[in-house]
Length: 243
Image (cartoon, rainbow, N blue to C red; front, side, top):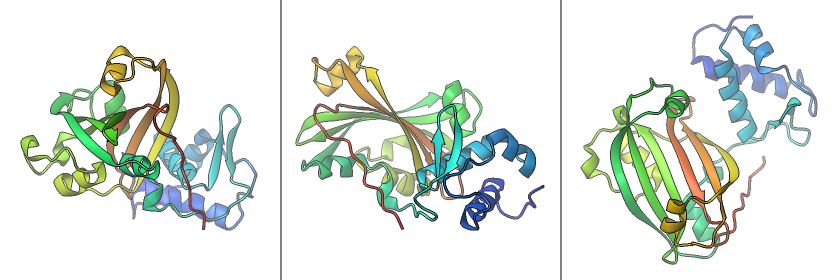
């Protein structure tokens, strides 16, 4: 089966898979075909399939089990992803009952690493804008945030960027881009000396690493983030709305 080029390839693949879940071609609780099988059937790359599956997982339609495969969520047939479900670090701090503030540490140009280029669909070495910012809860450092965005998105010189804005506002105001969804992987990691120093917590042996990939509503990669989260200072929780 080939997909006719009308919308973007990723959008078409998403529509096909959503319809199969909606009409029970893929039954709730059952495993769906693998990335390789879907790639062959739909005539698209595995990278496209992987991106679409990641979005469906974020939206709660499917569950990906490491080493076992991908399953239709047995408890929900249709889930809406709302903007409030995005990882908003300011909101996270405020939900913990603290006053949030942002301290810009660095806004500068850098070359894309191989990993960053892969996520952002760029060539290694292409120019990025890197943001290093410290998030504070009642003036206590709690999150060290690192984000990179393709330089080509920016419509203003870097010195005009207000680093205290929410990240979504930076993308909206300076890049004319809107966040559609965010994929976040969370890992526990040993706290590097630099991270402990910036967070002013020399006793912290581990921190939570939040690896984030930001996409537009049409699946265009917008940014990559790596955040170091002091979970001894903040409670990390996510409430997801189901409809």
